[in-house]
Image 1 (cartoon, rainbow, N blue to C red):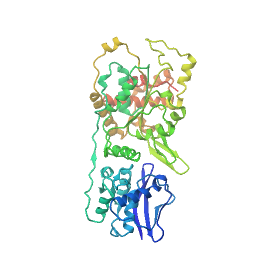
Image 2: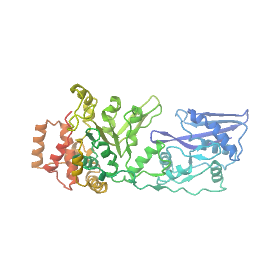
Image 3: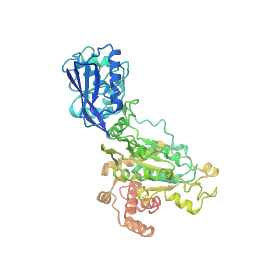
Image 4: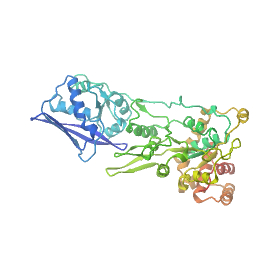
Length: 498
């Protein structure tokens, strides 16, 4: 007898329908899975056989053929264990004829019949919502899927309970999703950092407008401390943004333990030994990389020039377009990557060039080679560059009591709200006519900008960069117009021309 179940495959961050067909026919006992399965799918034979028997359900001594359609789509992962097992029970007429209709089913089976969580539950629920299907998953995944509006999700702890639910013997309750609040309890406070007023101000401006930031300073000057406290200055994600982030993290298998929408902006800080695929994403079947996991959040790259030149150059497309396109022989996929870059670097290989407390031991040639590791086009995509000097003990003792993160976060949130109400996006995304419209200058500021552009040799891109920064400084000040004082601060934060 033939039975079918609807399941899905993950292609990038999107769920694609997959039909699981199971045929049980007379003949020598055999269990075959076709439809372009990978090794983990092929091994489902043993997991399904053991799970059915250890659940006290019959396993047929017959010829079993499982087809995963469409056959030209590569299937990977253990998510097909549960739909194969339930279709096999239906093929033995142990489930009613319509028991599996209007369900999208996925889950990994343990040998004792327990259902383990899988990655991509939110993505599968979004697919189910398009067709009006119900979802049957493990309990952790069902709580994730229940976050999607219009989806009825059921969480079955075991294969036996899933069978009893579908047969009508013991219906499962509808799963309830929970939205996680923004949790900043693990983020250190800006009040821990004394001094560095210019760097603190540059970080606030960068976060408010979504501008990319590069901090340059000697070891121990506080660059990493500032970056690690940046998540505490960002407002919580909106529901739409949280859904985008959760979808990516769910596809990467990083949300099952939390089972809720991610409302805190992501903060990713890969080591400089990360591979190109780890940073951008990739693999034979591409997976999201660090830039996608940092979507709607922050990507912190410490020791910026120590990353491989190839890995750094791959950042140029997502910094410009807000997405990553990964092309492979089997598939070409697009991942969201609208992140904000925070980078930190030393001024030279030894780290002490320009440090009054310790002499630099690098030759001019070594310093030039070190700086040349960062290409001009990459630096051109960084709006803010600030020096973080090494402060002496006396200077730290004389420093005023710093502001707490909560106070700065309030200013950043207020400035972002102004931007959203005015143009619907952060100032860093203003381009072309939209920039001219929302960052229009009066006679005085226009003359100031022309003089600054001439004196500093600003290119067209440099001019627009300063204009965007000036708009953000004005928004932080609550000013509808961009004034000369705002442009002067923006010019001071302008990276060197490349």
